[in-house]
Length: 418
Ligand code: UD1
Image 1 (cartoon, rainbow, N blue to C red):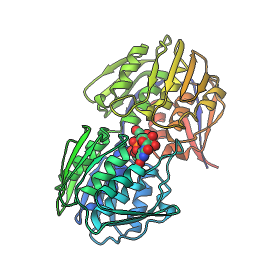
Image 2: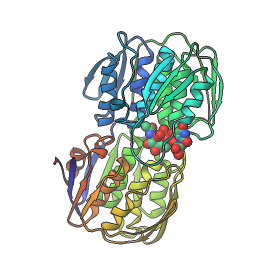
Image 3: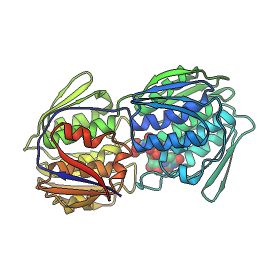
Image 4: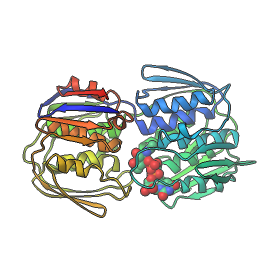
């Protein structure tokens, strides 16, 4: 197990550069097998989710050439074999191989994906989408066999604007015969980034970023060169850390419009920000923050992935704040640990009520999932004394070089294996 230790109460000063977006990268790597030529993807973060996907590529005999920040994927000699449970359960996004293999070979055999335990996380919408395109889905315990004689374009309405289902259906439909329309599609920037990648390989996708995506099937996808967008959740996490301890802290390589709801909430609370075209500076931590309420929602609403780190900031606001989680039913696992650190929080159903401000005092806490882990880091940076975060491997799934980035701006933080 990995453990992160933080000596809190230090100011963070300097610049943190944001890496490529995890949630785009984890779809782009499986998407790259849709061509038979070389796909070069730049700004790929070195996180354990990327490594886990590369392990699946290696298992499928896909050639990969990884250098700092970029990856060249060449699937010309690949084998479409079963993706075993050991590989699929390492991360949620392994399910993108279902859409990509189905799109390329009309057959995918793999096990139910893994990922953070933040809710039931069903994949029924993905499977209904594949079926609408003409595939049959067989489910033997945890194993899924998805196959089709021919994939034909279809009109698909998603009951929920699911990020995963939208991307997976795009991957399956890109080489199908005819036109596919996805209605009530999710609009996250990562979906636009994946559509741009596929279009640069010769796909015909329009409407990504809106709730209606049109995919006109093509026969062949060719080589391409692509850049991953900056990670809006990593950016938001460091901006929140800046609001807690920054003096001043610049977060560079940000697309501010991707985190509009966070920036608006911070300004409403009284956090002093300078927002540039591709950076955000937290000018200093404000000791007189106003309480506020947030409710998570699909993009462009307040992102669920920033809910946990944002809760830490609310423990420092004056008065009563409320956090309502609408996407995941089990995303308050960070709350008991924030209470151990000294926060006053009560959870009823899907709403947490936070009374602040309360000083946080370092203690031993757990990173129960990726973003809960980021919340623990944020809390540990602020808390007086030493905070020890166990199960820290969750954090390394999504934050590239977090120890190095925070150390460079003045944090006293280290990671060790026990
Ligand atoms: C993605 C992100 C995750 C983020 C989430 C919501 C990746 C790799 N992960 O997860 O960080 O928290 O979007 O912004 O991009 N649902 C169903 N059936 C389905 C699919 C989803 O009921 O077939 C439900 C889920 O249980 C959840 C909601 O739809 O309540 C949203 O899920 P979805 O957008 O699919 O999340 P992910 O793609 O798994």
